[in-house]
Length: 113
Length: 110
Image (cartoon, rainbow over all chains, first blue to last red; front, side, top):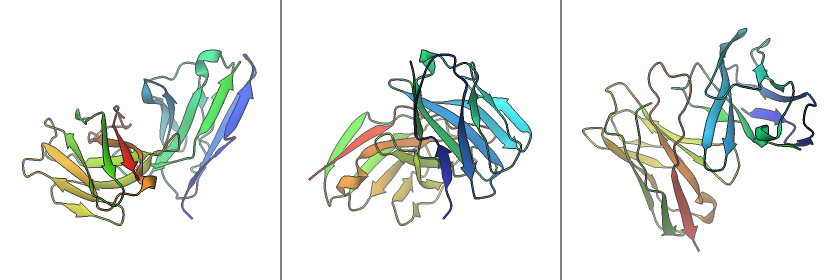
């Protein structure tokens, strides 16, 4: 089954404790991206990747890192999480870019205390 | 992305057709109209997309006006599980992201 998976689905952590949210797709897509969703602000893009080893900032990249060492994986790294990063996070992938059909993961709900 | 305008909320009765409008008056000739939906905190789900002609798939139909300045997503027989926020999006050719506006919150009533 074609899908985008994210782990963990839920995470409660404390300020400053490094964490990684994994994202994996099995569709051989070149394009992957991360969004965060907050009440009243909608979905905003954090980072995106057009292909392996090619990443770029979205609208709200501060406090986040990403890497794209393999085509199927696009982890989101929070080196020193802060409470304002409490949010619902979604990973998405598509064949080549935003104009292609996006497949979204189930989401990761992160709480930073 | 071309700016889109959608009603904030709509409702319809279960089993009836749900018609969700979207205005995209600044759309360019080669830009597609995409529809996604998000069911309560789940990942957004692709529904359908089109350029000029009307499109239909197993989930919905998309009617695009001849001048392409507006479109309507039709769920022919809405069920309770169709209650969701529906987003109409027009990504630019060179765009690297989708811009999700506020969407239309559809409530399907029993």
